[in-house]
Amino acid sequence: MKRQLAFCSCFFVAIVFYPAYAMSGMVVITDTSIGPYNDASGGISQTIPDITIMDIKKDSAKILSLSADNTDRIITIGSSALDFSKKVNASIPLTYTMVLSPWTYSARPASGVVIKISIADQLNMLKRVFPRRNKIGVIYYPNDSSAQDVKEARDLSSPLNVSLYAIAVEGQSDIPKALSKFTPDTVDVIWLVLTSVTCNFESITLHINHALNAKLPLVGLSASHAKAGALIAFSVDCHDIGVQTALLARSAAGSDSKIVTPRKIDLYVNPDTQKKLNFSDMVLPKDIKLIQY
Image 1 (cartoon, one colour):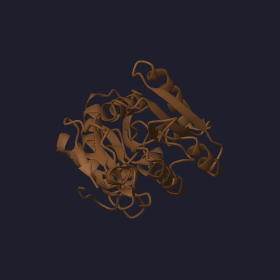
Image 2: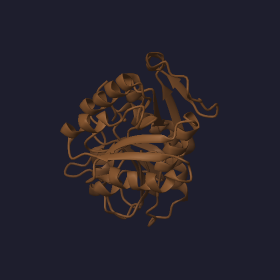
Image 3: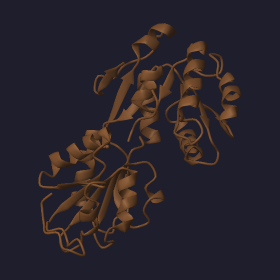
């Protein structure tokens, strides 16, 4: 239940240095030990069949030998690969994917696909699943990106005919008190947004237990949240993110700095939680991939 995440051609070896790696086209830099990264890599390879895949651990010397003369573009998968790209020739255009905050790892101009589902997409999906539930409770941390997420959600709430009951917390110790304010009288749904405080194992457990006790649906951020006990969770399709990244890489100019969000959302449902809540007030869209735990 704990967090899990994470995803050749030969040449001569000289005596005192590793020569430039002879190749052309695009190169993917990734950590092949992480499953979701391999899913994204598969989507990239499906879209660009002749692309070369390199592992940041096994192929580090080859990666460092890449140059603009033998490489059209590098695509990094995950934060470690993006961070490693700072060591690679900066003249090679870069596209990244499967990261949350790309600017944390690289300051060079680049386009990419972040792993975060947009707030607009989350709220629209929430309304599709719970069309008769309009009061949304959410906990956020005022000193990270969740504050901007909540601000954006407030701006979108009126057009969607929803109201947001947002409570700021300074730390994990504040979460139980904040959750106690979410009752069937005050909210219809509890929604998790990504924060540095609320999205760890302990706080997720607090959210799940409170939602079950209060008989309220909890909307999680990943498949693991649904598996742990959230009624539903929105998650990304890593293979499709790979396809999306490949299309972006093929169309992007070298100096682009375009950040896009995943175009496809998967919906996870926990039938056991649905039984415990005796909950039937939701609609499962038929055009969305549905996974049950």
